[in-house]
Image 1 (cartoon, one colour):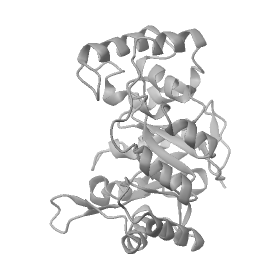
Image 2 (cartoon, helix red, strand yellow):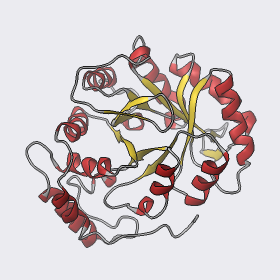
Image 3 (tube, rainbow, N blue to C red):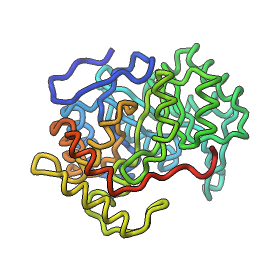
Image 4 (cartoon, one colour):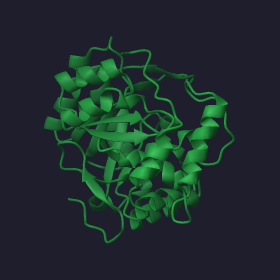
Length: 306
């Protein structure tokens, strides 16, 4: 059971699960191996009301899970741990291959549990997915782990509409992690509505578009030209204030969509953490602000994996 915290943070149940997660999640991928202030950042995040920490076995070849596990030691009743599986490092370390097989998932969960120093994972996510995967076999693995008590719930991390539809149809996923921002509104076409209709939570990543909505020089991004990126950054800046800088405003835009349970933010510095917490403290954007933000940004659609 997660202890209640007296902060301005708000929380939502993740899909049909009993995981009451903070609307800002801590994306642990941004933490660097050997980073001296990892413990400090995680402690400050918990103080700020963040209870959802998201990592993956892929990050730093498992070292990210180890470091996160160390930093969260003694805090298990305060936090929700999410990790991912499916990308298998080659023995020579030259890269990784996609492996959504049942045997691999069942074997690899043991390593993640060990690295994270926990008896169970709150949310175990498939780290990708293709329509050619043995989807029923993958689901069997997650269902078995759930029955064994090694994971509480499972979900997928995917932007592919065709893959998402199959998991909605065949499985008991409670969440989908997908990229969503002012510069990537592709999920609005079908995915967000589909997931909302089925009571499946959405964990949004990439809310500041790699920093392009938070002060980085404009450059082409997805199907947008550099001038279009600059225009999007400008409207975000214009909607910002002392209480909500550009990064926080970009996050507020994402959190405004009713299908979004939480925004998972890559946090590597104390300023990143402050920006993320600011998004909650500033509250919702006004309807006039939302209209002004959306107007200059043309709607794009997924061209593949439909």
